[in-house]
Every structure is written in structure tokens, then in C-alpha cells.
Length: 493
Image (tube, rainbow, N blue to C red):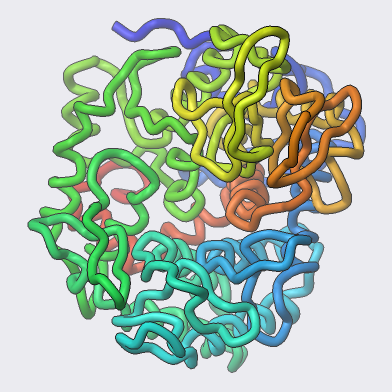
């Protein structure tokens, strides 16, 4: 028996059936002044999603960040800005996902989006690959986690990252599907996206039975950790299984799902597969429409519980669990409430302890935060904003409250700065990131690419389903889902 979700304004069925985006705790029945509407196709029918003007503005401002910072000559997107830094390969994949959104919204011409996409794919295709510790961008088709913004080569001693490569490929394959015209540049985009994908030797990274390693260092070999147990790795596993050139066996997916019972919890809400930082419930969903499709584990869970369950529903419950955790606020952090919440991997003020109101508090710099896991009172706007496709009825009020609370100190011409901490209102020592803003608390000084991208893309998936419906026709992904045992919904249709 499933408990009723905390603070829901309607039943699960009501949320799915409603096409009205709530602007407060409850859905509004009247039209919103200045709201934009977008046609959405669901199951062959057209729906209209009314988007709150502030959410539309947030998406545009965050999109403009990618336009501002992504190098026009290479397509590399920095890990963070304005702090000068290295390129994040995952953020490049997110930028590739953003350009078609700009076309869909009328913020960028198709010609400019095509040009930016082609520059990126050409550049990454031509970057050197090899086993050397320096002078290359990757090996076996994989890319290093971070690349030097000047040379495109490995930055420092970062790892060859299997998941960051997968997130890049998600953006590339989406671009290949979106640019489906006869224009010579669109033909080349499709060819390069497929060539980049087919070059990756996914099976090389299986060093322990039916498990993909998280990465590799030329100095020391494979990382002793694998993609196993529920987290953000679903896209990685599926792209590896669907490869037409270097596939891993479907048993990799079954091995992954075998560990789910260790993550199955009803803490802070309805039963769901838990991964504390919310990005684990967002990243794969940027490119894959999990609504209504089920693997063997989800079919079994549905049969046991008498409730049709899928990975989209799982993420929806995880979002509500975050809200419940903030509402309960057992640690007594300032600002936490059912109206303002959101924990994920993000910047923090620094690694130090400080006594506040007679209580010693521990703070962290960049860290993966979640309910009960390295929670130091730091809220990341991307945690809520990029969850809008799962639970708009609680996300929209949260975004609006963060804009109200932080004002111009937090919400700028490029959207939200990465994070803020209402508890830390003064500091008796140095800060590693950001600054103290009177009446607000600590506010980060940077925007992070891997937190900006999900905001743009998941707002678009909510309002038009652009990436989801485009990827319905991506043959490599569809093959992977079928090989992994997924059935139902759009996959069968």
C-alpha cells in the first residue's frame, strides 16, 4: 500500500491528466497573464501546457548562459563561469541539447544552432585519442572528464569518464535526430554523431563481470568502482548496450537492477529507488522518456504493489521526498520549507566548521548533497528547477520563492547562480566560493554547466517534450531499451 504523497494537491492520476501548470500550492484554473502555451503530443494527442512567465524567463536566461560561455570556435563549454576553468565534457553534451531548444523557442535560428552543433562535433571528432597521459582528449572513443579550454587535451590528471562521455553522446545523438533535413550540414551532423558514438569501445570498460567501470587513468588503470546500484548511470548503460560496434551484453542492465533492493526506501515519502542528490534522478531523463515504459524490475514491482510503476514515477517520488525532507527540517537549517528546497551536487561555501546560534555547523565546498547526506544547508536551484517535468505543482512555487528570497543577488541575467545557503549569514574566516549577501546568506559566485543544462532541457521536456519525442526515434537508444527488456508505452507504439 502506497502512502499518499506529502503535500500533493491532487492524486497521481490527477497530476498526469492535468495540463495546467500550478503557479502556487494548488493548480490555478484561470489563465495566467503573459503565460506562453506550447502544444505537446502525448500518446498521439496534442496537449497545451501553460508555462508560468517566470519559468519561461528562467529557461531563456539559462539558455543565454550557454550562448555566452560556449566557445564559438570549438564548441567547448566551461565547467563553471565566470571563474576561469576547464571544459566539462558533460556540459558540452548539455549544450548540444540546448541549441535545438533555442530553435524551438525562437531564441536562435536553425542555421546558428546547426553551425554551433557542427563546430562542436567536428572539433570533438578530430581531437587526438590514445593511451598517453597527456596530449590527448580521450582513449578508446571515451573522453576525459575535463579538457583544457585552450588545447582540448586532458586537463591535469582527470579520469577518462564513462558517464561524462555518455552525457556528451546523449547530446550528440539528440542533435543527430533533431537535424533531420537534407542540408549538407545537417547530413554531416547526423554522420558525425553516429561516428562519435560508434567509436566508443564500451565493452573495453567492462573489467568486472557485467559491470561498467566508472573510469580509467593512464597512470593507474581502471577505477575500482563500477556503475552498479541506482544512480545517474542509466543513460550510460543503455548507450553501451545499444552500440552497433562495441556493445556490452544486456546482462549489464540486469546486474545493475539486481542491486535495486538496497536503494528501495519509503524514507521521506512514498516507496522509491533512492539516490540522495537529485541529479541522479534527472540526468538520464534529460534524453530518455521513461514515461510508461518498464524493464523487468519495474514490471515486477508493479505486479507486487498493484500500481503501474516506471522510472519517471520514481523520479517524481524522489522530488517529493526532497520537499518532505526540507519541510521536516530536522537539522534546523535556515530557509528550508515545503516552499524552498533542493539538494544535489553543487558548490558550497567551503570546507570548515563554524558555530552558529550556539551550534557547531559543518560546511562543504563542491559536494554531492542529498537528504541526510552531506547536507550543510546549501540549496541548489537546479535541484528543483530541473525537476519541473516530474512535479511542476511543487517545483514552480519553489522556483518563484527562490527568486523572491534571493532577488538579484541570486537570480541574474543568466538565471540562478549555482547555489546559496541561508544559514551562513556571516563568516569569521575565508570562503572558498561566493560571498555573504546581507539578509540572504551565502551565495555562490559561479554558474556550473552541469547544473545549468538540466534546467533548460527539463523545462523544455515539461513544456513541449522536445528531447523526449525526438529521442523516441533514435535507433540506437530504441535498440538498447528493447535489448534491456523495456516494453510498453511509446516503445511499443
